[in-house]
Amino acid sequence: MFDNKDILVLSGDGIGTEVVPVAVEVMKDVAKRFGLTLCFSDGLIGGAAIDQTGSPLPEETLTKALSARAVLLGAVGGPDWDDLPTLQRPERGLLGLRSGLSLFANLRPALLFAPLAAASSLKPELVAGLDILIVRELTGGIYFGEPRGIELRNNERCGFNTYVYAEHEIERIARVAFELAQKRNHRLCSVDKANVLEVTQLWREVVTSLASDYPDVALSHMYVDNAGMQLVREPKQFDVMVTGNMFGDILSDVAAMLTGSLGMLPSASLAADGRGLYEPVHGTAPDIAGQDKANPLATILSVAMMFRYSLDAPAAADVIEQAVDRVLELGFRTGDIIGRGIQAGQTLIGTRAMGEQVLTQIEQLEQTT
Ligand code: NAD
Image (cartoon, rainbow, N blue to C red; front, top):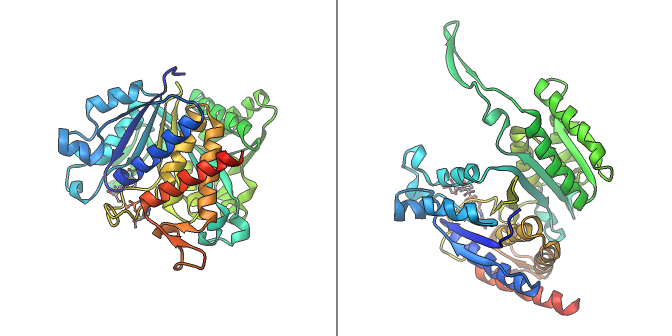
């Protein structure tokens, strides 16, 4: 674990440059209220870094990230850089950062604030108060397994990939998930395809073998096809779900859509040494960039995750999440979470005003406690 409380702020491109400053204001405010001394620095990544240095991940940014306790990232990319060769594109900066920091555990909460239940594609009663955490292995599995490729076999082209997990890779992601379940509602569902794939038979064996270390966590197993069904049938049955890279990629997007809007979805990626990268799930939204229309709540909620998982300040995280809930309860909405037009009691506001409303509610929460 790192002793320092250095936070590297990487706004990136497009709406990243609008939502990140708003989230940093919230972070500074909450840190002060909780007596946490944080040390902020910033850096370049993505298209902005290409424009200024020629590289999507300048050496200086990676060096700063490696010595920081946590990184807050906006988003990278946009039409200005779409024509660059793949290896020089803004997204390479993000991939380079993830691999440079050895981030193997991706945490994607699907949290539906009750006032937004109507925005979900499911019936409000199925999703109101939804709070699932999907823990996805990020550096192994079929996305990275070798051999891989496309080759000529029997006079036709064959594509192939290798789905491989070593025991230590399964154990370290499972332990992250068990520990998270201990801090939440003590239920962990491991998702695999153990009826067909040997690699996930091993996955199930390893996860099961760890359960005795976490007697306060109820472990269950589910095949991935059933997990997909259950997520849209009765999502509130889940607390923490843990799965491999590809299944996690798919299930986390399914779970995300239960909550209605990209502008509300935070994420965290953690390394074994306690480092963390925190970022909203959304991209740079070029269609609304520079117009003060972006929803900053996904980034603000990513800051809450940073307090919870990298700064060991869960109470600070709770305050931010409660403040967001109250702002929504009061009817404040950015354009993306309005649904079918403004309803009575709702107010359309912009990025900065949304940040101010969150700060106001944080202040009020402090006065009432
Ligand atoms: P996007 O997430 O940027 O936007 C999709 C839609 O959602 C757009 O209509 C956008 O206006 C809306 N939206 C997204 N975030 C919002 C927010 N906070 N508030 C309000 N509305 C929001 O996805 P895209 O359009 O496919 O990609 C745009 C660019 O972002 C591309 O260059 C892509 O490569 C990049 N991208 C980056 C990341 C990342 O940095 N992690 C992730 C996804 C996409």
